Length: 112
Image 1 (tube, rainbow, N blue to C red):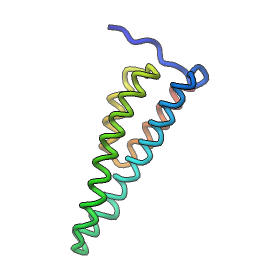
Image 2 (cartoon, one colour):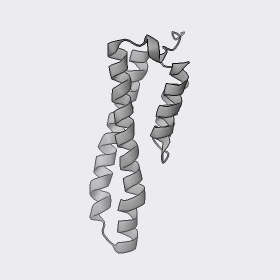
Image 3 (cartoon, one colour):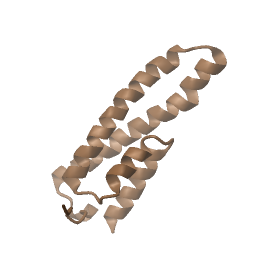
Image 4 (tube, one colour):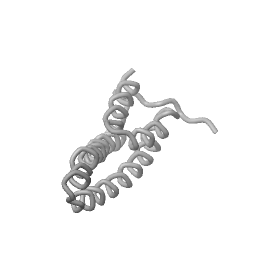
């Protein structure tokens, strides 16, 4: 099974641009929720004894994570991303700042 060559940003159709924009937005939301969970909610829970922060931020992060993965799969099929992009996007979602770095690298590779 071969995959078509990746599109470049200038060659993307309106529908493909829309999919890439949705991926960027979901990545930023998911990445931000992860940073909020690690940097604010967990310290509130373990240092100040306020477990509610992890409960609510964790639920939001979980929903955004699922939305990000679904959006990533949709965008990968729509844009015909390089083979490395899908696993890199999934891996990036498990790392702090990962979705931001993935978005940057993906757009840089699609530019040229």
